[in-house]
Length: 97
Image (tube, rainbow, N blue to C red; front, side):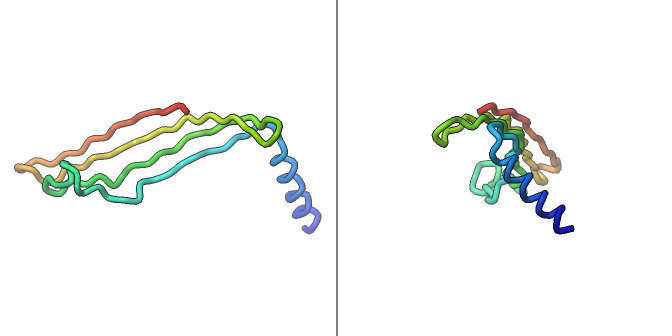
């Protein structure tokens, strides 16, 4: 068991020294924008937004690196009861950085 733990620690260190960077990025909204026009409407809310996507990069000499991301962003808008009708909509977008 100790041998496997030591091998795991050493393999993580070797992977961290690789010139190629692979990973994922993500995030979510932490505030509720109820002061917007949609928030003023009866029961509307905007809390369900998130961003997620892959990232890839290359490590360069002297501590520099170049990275690129493809981030997917989905935003939901739920309308409450307005004039006897309720509804919701969403938007999907990709951002390449």
